[in-house]
Image 1 (cartoon, rainbow, N blue to C red):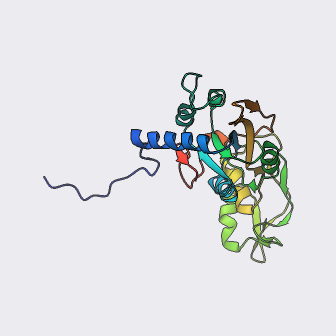
Image 2 (cartoon, helix red, strand yellow):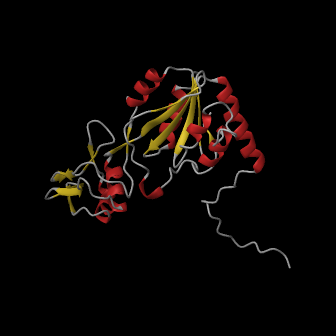
Image 3 (spheres, rainbow, N blue to C red):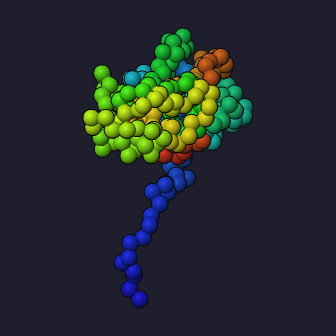
Amino acid sequence: MPKSKRSKLVSLTKVAKKTKEQKGALMQEVQANADKWSYCWLFEVGNMRNSHLKTVRKLWKDSARLFFGRGAVMAKALGTSPEEEHKEGLHKLAQQIKGQVGLMFTNSPPSEVIAWFADFHPPDFARSGNISPQTYTLPSGPVLQHHSNPPEPFPHNEEPQLRKLGLHTTMVRGVPTLDVPHVVCKEGKTLTPEQAQLLKLIGIKLVEFKVGLRAYWESASGEVTQVEGEDVEPDADGEKDGEEDEGEDEDMD
């Protein structure tokens, strides 16, 4: 029988798995960079956003090499035991590779790296499942969108969406308006999908993308030094950034 020409549903979430050859190539890249650079850093990402991680890569393009992907492959490349480690001391770093972490190879001194990442924490929109760091209330009056400066009122055709997200608005001179203040979220409470969507629609960024430095390996001595850095908030409910799949082995160069 001829093949059916009917439309078929294809899941856009499916991602081709890395082949053994690709994983082997990634391992070789990690090991080559361990041979090339003076330091190897282990870092953790909070409120993961591909756009911000790409900014880090761009700003460090000439002075570092970043890898971010499946931890098991990176750990195997470094070697998780003294017998398997690629270079002396690397197994101490490899044993700490757990969760959403990455590696950064660089010649920059530790003090410079720590200071740079302490100052890099761009704001972003919270997602469903995030814990709200503050209480945010919309005042009575026209509902404003904060994507511009100064903020502008929402157009009339946005009112159905605002009402769908929980706002009790009325139209005043063609502008969605609140008669009384509306509490969008409360400090310490988990954000619902509707709250997160409303905050993004309004243009309010409540979370920050952060890179938490956990430890670094020094090639000259083979020593691994722990870094007492700021805790980072994991991505909400295991959500992934929509631009690309972070779950696969990603060479961020």
